[in-house]
Length: 101
Image 1 (cartoon, rainbow, N blue to C red):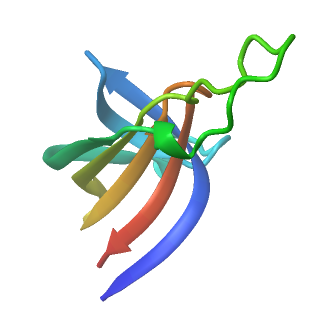
Image 2 (image 1 turned 180 degrees about the horizontal axis):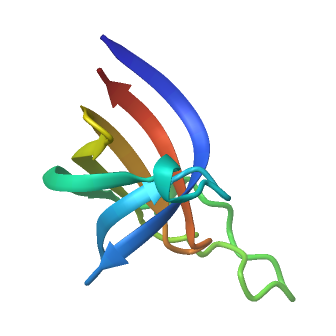
């Protein structure tokens, strides 16, 4: 069974690869340890759908940047499952987007 989420999470990364994650403010018991990366892909912005640059706006017409997805196997305690993490590098934010349990 899969569940879809859009929860903000904090991610600890090693060399750009998720190593652990959890909800903001979660203590050590609330962290998930990444056992292995199952998939990693990048979705580029749809530059053809962006509006033409407006005069005076330096950022108009430029993409926000690519979005990275990481499908990982992770464990907390004795319970392991597969999680999909979304990283928006331009904002520095991470989301938990899907869980297979």
